[in-house]
Length: 260
Image (tube, rainbow, N blue to C red; front, top):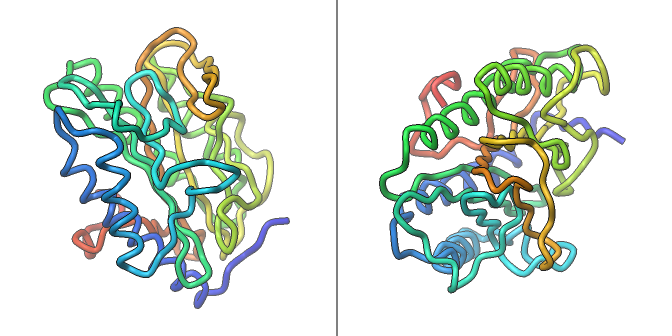
């Protein structure tokens, strides 16, 4: 069942989502050669709890950490570890959620470590822009598949591929709500978009082929061909005036949403 939120509930969700965005901004600034993903995870949990929020991922279906940190060919759900040391030329996806005031926030960014190649920079640019294309497709009386179509069209026109096995989702009083939000498909299909729906839109884009596999830890998904993968995510409310991005750092309040 799709749950539409009232304006008051969306304002409550804003607090959780701004906190996630603020923490991700801090973590992105920490990323450097020699930093471990465990370092990032510890800082994320400290900041979340200091703000009165609970990490959303920790202990969710047995997941052991606050963050998902996915390096290079890891697509999603990489588990932070003191043994995972970031190196110059890597990329790391940092995915985080919190629960605060009864509602969840969820966002992800992919960050370059030191100096990366031009092709890697292009992957990050295209993935982030595909998220923007998906958000731009959000409109009242549109369909969920309009979002995925926009993402897929943008990505594939630029020579990259979209992961099929993992998708975006509704979010609110639960971390994962209906509807699912695939990053591919034809326009005009699936759930109709209504005022008050809140969606976590999260393209996962591969430099090579789209196929992925899950490692023996039961969580970490990697590209089957070993190619790099990037992941960006915003939580977005459907409003009568268009999409409203909730995961904006407080340092960027006042910046037009198109520039995010």
